[in-house]
Amino acid sequence: MFIVGLTGGLATGKSTVLSIFRENGVAVIDADEVARQVLEPGTKAWQELRNYFGDEVLHPNGKVNRLKLGELIFNDIEKRKKLNAITHLRIQTAMMKMAIMYFFSGHKYVVMEVPLLFETGKMLSFMHKIITVVCEDHQQLERLCKRSDLSEKAAKKRIKCQMPLEKKVANSNFVIDNTGDFNHTRSQTESIIRLLRRSKFTWYFRVIVLITLMACIFGVTHLVGSMVENKTRLK
Image (cartoon, rainbow, N blue to C red; front, side, top):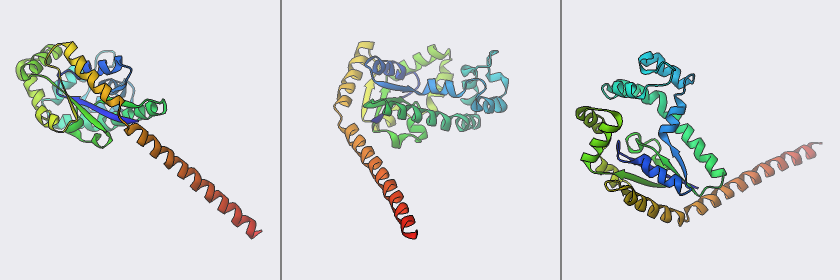
């Protein structure tokens, strides 16, 4: 199995592309969904978040108020760093555990949606291929303002906190232009799916895993045999 990283900018359409992969039977991992699980009320990450940011970032039912939290971290770099310190490692660990489960379930590959894949750089080494979703600048701005109920000034500030799309594109294997309609996005995504299905990498990976496992078994068997033989000689 191999991992495909799916990234892009805020409101460029990553979730739309991920849904197309899911509809085509591809195993997917959504970082936003994992982040919500990591910050469920009562978890260690939730406790640390509450201790640092206070109840103002929580809804009355205890769940994290993502809009309020977003306002705080995008206006304060230190608070943003603190949130990353609380959540990133936990999110990455949970995502890798899910990938391992998909591997043992027999999936050829998994698409992992990681918004800050290039910004953090923590998971780049695990990615066999990288897909970046883009759209026109004015569309990204309009979508973000509408989706998050932000002013144009606030939306631009959030977009500038991320790496420019041009740099992400330059370091990607595939680019999906989500400027047009849904059918155009679907066509591009399904074209990539066909290419990934033809990849031979998964078989190389499985052979390497099998050889490693056999070597470990042989090594343990040889060690146990040697210990038994030595005990017999001593007797």
